[in-house]
Length: 235
Image 1 (cartoon, rainbow, N blue to C red):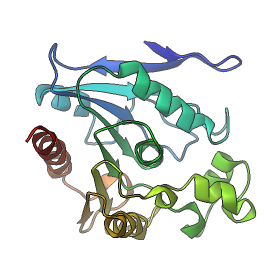
Image 2: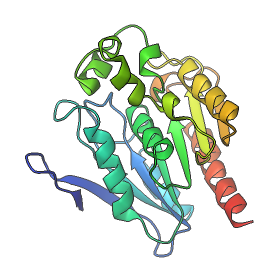
Image 3: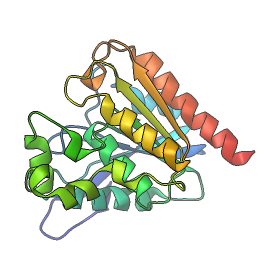
Image 4: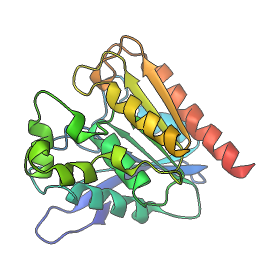
């Protein structure tokens, strides 16, 4: 279904999956370096993730957002915020993303969107702290991060760590060959220093996109976090 129409751009859609009376809603955001990807394509080994989450009692809203070839930051973040508001009801609401989608989900969660928690798989959290090929980040920002430091900081979840942040789960492969695990470590440290609730799980031997990881274990850890967060909110 269409959740947002911005004049001059393609209609933005999301797919809803879940039981009639879910315990919570998850806005799921795909990865792809902000320049590719689709709400309909999940990571290898995770193709049945929406169905698995639905079976666990969650409603999943897998959302597209504008890619960097269509519009630069903050356009994709604005889309994510719109998707969150589109599916909002009286139930708890979480964001869950992978890589670029995790980055956008964290920005929404830490930057004012009212959500009950965030699951972030291997996210870039500090754009100025990345090294190597920065073409993806340059496409997102419209320039290399070092040439637009203020914008790069604004587009970095690390900048927005604060005491009032919702609970955050950061999961990262220790051997991530694209987004270093240090990106999650630094955000976890910043959230802890601010007094915000955060869990950090580094997966030994896993690379980007969970290559080398056990999909079932990764999903189980993420669902446990959501259930624990729901339980604490109700108690």
